[in-house]
Length: 198
Image 1 (cartoon, helix red, strand yellow):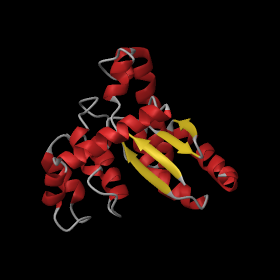
Image 2 (image 1 turned 45 degrees about the vertical axis):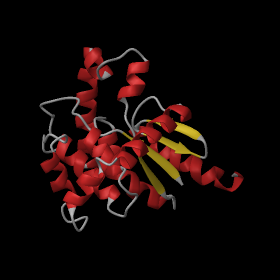
Image 3 (image 1 turned 180 degrees about the vertical axis):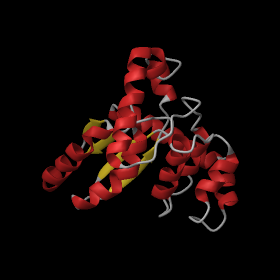
């Protein structure tokens, strides 16, 4: 098994989310989807914005690189008119329950943000992302505001910090961290080759 730690505002988590399940199947590996928040981690580093906004040259490179990455994966792409978008509510929805609908919901949210330029902080957008996946999307959205769900997201973020996660996407395989969409295959190979040692 690998853990896939993701933040909805994260650019490179978009292609990672779109391909992680398919790639993991080729390795015979299960994926545990772990939503968390980068904001507290960035604040601890003295950042109040995405590093791609703080460092313009890095940001320009990232947008072009992401465009190339999406094209190579045949993943739809549209430069968002706002970056980063607030992914708090979406992350809470992802923490309601670890249901079979979760991976597709996550992919739908990333598509809404990075392919359709929709505001993923808008409850109506999230209801659309849940539509067809659960019986009653509004019930899931209501549950996202429960204290139990909020606490689950806080605990996820605290665990991410304890693991040493500093960015998204991060993959954890057999207690080893792999940061970035381009490290997915390496993480899976590590999980495959070290599984018998655990």
